[in-house]
Amino acid sequence: MKFFKLFGEYILLMKGMFTKPENFKMYWKELMHQCVEIGIGALGIVSIISVFMGAVSAVQTAYQLTSPLVPKTTISQVVRDTVILEFAPTLVCIVLAGVMGSKIAGELGNMRVSEQIDALEIMGINTKSYLVMPKILAALITIPLLVIISMALGIWGGRFASGMSNIVSLETFDKGLLMGFTPFYISFALAKAYTFAFIISSVPAFYGYHVKGGALEIGRASTTAVVASCILILFADYILAAILL
Amino acid sequence: MIEIKNVSKSFGDKQILKGVSAVMETGKTNLIIGTSGSGKTVLQKCMVGLFEVDKGEILYDGKSFTAMHEEERKELRQQIGMLFQGSALFDSMTVERNVKFPLDMFTTWDHKKKIDRVNEVLERVNLKDTNKKFPAEVSGGMKKRVGIARAIVLNPKYLFCDEPNSGLDPQTSMVIDLLIKEITQEYNMTTVINTHDMNSVMEIGENILYMYQGEKEWVGNNKEIIFSKNQKLNEFIFASEFLRDAKDMRMLEEKGIIDNDRNMDEVMKDPEAHLLMGDNDKRESHPGPADDK
Image (cartoon, rainbow over all chains, first blue to last red; front, side, top):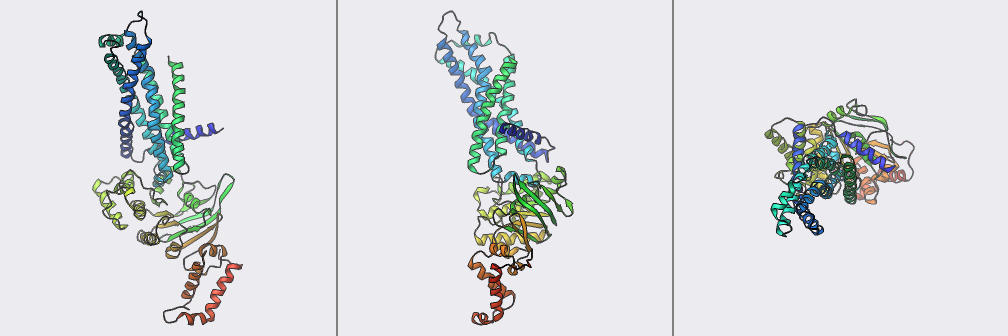
């Protein structure tokens, strides 16, 4: 029963966002601000994770491929496909759910508790539209870009680790990268990125917007938002894989 | 003028407001007072539309707020300023940007005109050289004044203040109270203040609504409150012996029994003084039927 109540409130929050902006310029400024916060703010952590996950993927694949019958180019193929299909969209988005989700829930929760949202409402501003929509749009713009950067850095990390550890020569790695490439994987990864971006931004915004109480409740809302986002990401990952692959 | 007509509001099974009716007058500081849980905050939130009323009507200068569409409410809200208990300033913005925010959102003025207006209202609330400071860098009293500046920057017709003195020392509270009163008269606003600060009641209470357990219990002003025979009101306002003594003194002063030429020995011999003070004591224990409800 509680789930249906929460889901209903979530739908109402999403529905409430679609009204005519009071001042388009101010909304645009807020959108740009959120793009910087979400996109540039997460670039560092995404870069580090991506390079290392690519490197680890290369080393572990090489460790398990002991048969001389399996060509060395397989290593780069495995790195490429796992990074594009799973690591870049899913792993990065799970990390972003933690980083951005807690930030969004905390920010909105603090605004709710300190009556800043009420202050905006009394000024005649649709807070759902002004505070939540720019966050969702910014996530939809920047997170797919971060996923694309993550793909490139992940593959580069695998290539770098392969070369540094003498697992496979760089020429062989590059050759493997171009073998049997399926462009649809990129579309699939981007479909996942857009879905996860929506979850990462809207779910924490929902929990933050509806905080009641004080500092303790803000912390609780942030934790719940991150946990719910991660579960929904994994659930959506399975559904998308089952439907699209 | 804001009229509240028979307003009721419940949360779940608990009825918070029970058919409250009152009038908030223009150009006056209208105070809503009452103990914690008496429904004064809920009433104020109903008046600004943060809560929807279950029953009854709220009229702004004759126009029904409760019957308005969201767009009409949005328009009306641009004529409403509100000072929140915790000031509700935007943490990430400087004082200047906080005050400028409503101008950015609702006017098409150029930057210079907006800054001039911001400086004008900041000067009005006696805040200079704080433009570039963040809310975390200013004191509680200054935050309240920034809150007032933000509330009046669009020249509102109605000003709502939720416990403007909470967390402030008595001297700063008085400064804030007098500032609100001055601004109310200067801008000819309808100001509604939600408080349980007795200094505010006595100093700026031009129209006082006393709420008790979700109902209107007493209406009057800061002069009438001294002579009120309402037991619940007297128990709330004059809760301590010190305040009861102060009330007696004020009553004697108002009746002209105390003045600069008479010493206290003379006053204490005055039978009228005894009658008044005795009447007051009697009233508190046995309320009369002719209550000025």
